[in-house]
Image (cartoon, rainbow over all chains, first blue to last red; front, top):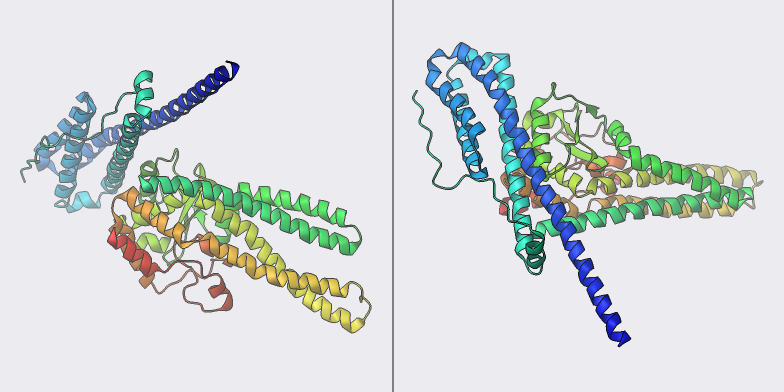
Length: 184
Length: 304
């Protein structure tokens, strides 16, 4: 009788240890996911803050690009009102596109291209765009890892009990990406 | 996710090897100290002295080996205002690699094309590039090189390579130095015939050291195994999602006629992305030729 009891206790202890291990690793991974999402927000905010300066600088040299500048400002405002991750992602893509167009158009203005302030802003924004895409990549990798982990057996049993839920990728839904319309 | 798994294994392996290097260093210094103490009449004294020196130097190597290496290579710290472009790339790839904070940025003012990373862990790390690299590579290529260095940081290759440089390097220099002084002293001693009883022991010690020096050089060579470099290339490709960037950077590095000899100390040659002594054909250059063939690395990247 005693032997049976001991075996039961040992098995239970092993199960509890296993659950603790899985729980801790899932918590670590989930924190990593949250962290990398915060990293995207930091970079999005950085870009958001840089744009008014850029618009001001370009305005001084390229008076005829009013429409383009407005579309940049509008895309920037859309970033703020975006709610879900998918909305945010497609707003971000839209803003990236208008900025790319803006820098392409700037090529036509030699004086603007010679402006030190503009060059600095351009490098800053290119750098930030780059960081945004790397932050998204890292976040999506982490989400992938996390989602796989909580869906695989036997983790899925534990994850279900402890309330771990699948995370959403930072990705614009396909087909919603409109081509940019720019008048020259 | 096999890359992820091999990275975890690599981190464990590197941490383990770092301990082994430190332990090996302490044992070796202990043996040397013991033999010296014995010659002087008190092995215990020699052992204690050696243990003290060994432990202090190991701690210094662990906590500030990176600074020693940076000084040896002639790298200078630069600010974001001076090199915004380089900083942006380093910060972006640190985000991509999921590091908590980006490594510090250093520059070697040299027209050669080279780069290295060092430090004891990702939180205490730095990336150094030559100004030549900044001038001759485009953004994608520079991203490839920085991603390669970022992988060394993330994998803890930097800790292992730093200790190999600072601890093994000093043993090689020490044995080299002692070997020379023993050979000179030994000859003089035999001529004078007054140190007959210590003479044979000194010669024995000299022989031991003569064997040890190349052995340790071999260890440095092992520090840069091909596997380690190929893995860093593969992780770099995973970080940038653009293998052709690094491939074309390596192509440019390969074709550049300008090796980085001036500042590349022998002990730190294995840290660089490409061998800084390519052009020389001396005994030491071949002894320390640590790098896998660059053509093979390019071929693998192109095949990804």
